[in-house]
Length: 83
Image (spheres, rainbow, N blue to C red):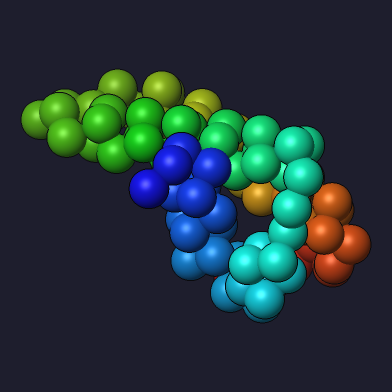
């Protein structure tokens, strides 16, 4: 699975109201957002694998994920509500 497809799948889990739109979304700009989301989410996963994950880093990347979610929803033209 490509990084963009991984991000698309992760976003579909986080934004269930937008799954159909995410499935059909195309273009370089949205693909770049999918990739960024995948990288941020993977980083969170990797940080959480530590016995004592650096909380400030997890918090920072979680915030980044939320920002990307909001941007994706904006690009899709939907309401900003998540989950």
